[in-house]
Length: 361
Image 1 (cartoon, helix red, strand yellow):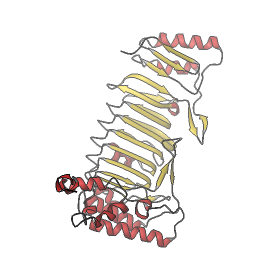
Image 2 (tube, rainbow, N blue to C red):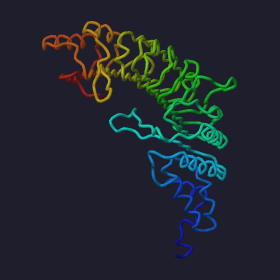
Image 3 (cartoon, rainbow, N blue to C red):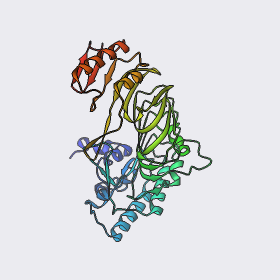
Image 4 (tube, helix red, strand yellow):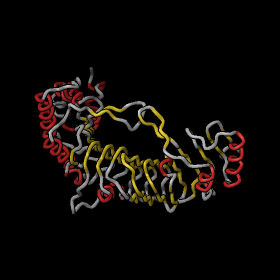
């Protein structure tokens, strides 16, 4: 091949490191034999995904302690050689189920030592990591203290962690945009460190516990999911730009001044435009648990009309998976009352009923 035709030779090292980040780390290290220039290029990969499969080339679901110790040693030695800032640092130990976007299968047998995990996260913090995923154990573990030193984080995903103690000098994640928490033990105070970020736009808290009266206050938050494992007494949301809200097992909630009582367990989606001007409201009266639909609310038609009455700007109302009335004439009467109560309603979607007054512009 002529020098003019060798495109890779003309690329800068940072770009080559970005290309190597597209393949498993095991294969990236093997590329070091290509030439002298490539010998240490794997140490400049900005996006690291360190899983047993990426390192060993196969995934043993029942490894012995020696194999786990070997993988830990390889990861530690690799990070010692690594020489560039990190855009992404993933330590995942799970697979997701296609039936639900919130169900994950965490491998019970792959458990890295706390000392190693804390050391790796400390290294990521020193390398100004921007996107961090941490899932290293099936059992609940204390979150690594070095997490609170990751000042440049824009995306954070945590699994099976305990976050109850916050360093006294911690000032918050001032660059965090997206965060996802699965099976996390919180306190109301510890959650505030993640839910009061000035640039936070998306926050998902799934199957977590320990919360009693959480306050979500983020000026730029547009998407919020709170699916608690145990019932939460009160949820207070002060997010003027909130577009979508999904909430389950919330007794009472106040969203930008709108109070939800009794119906809160059924509120799954709430789309808000410019503060309290709710234009789209989707209520799901049952939640899916182990492939079965379980009812979460028993509101009567009269109580439902009282609930939706204040939403005078509502244009779209969707109520799947549950019926408030059984007789056809009662359904017709309810539909008429809904359109009388909501003068701007343009679309109504209920079981067996679909009414479209006019298309949205």
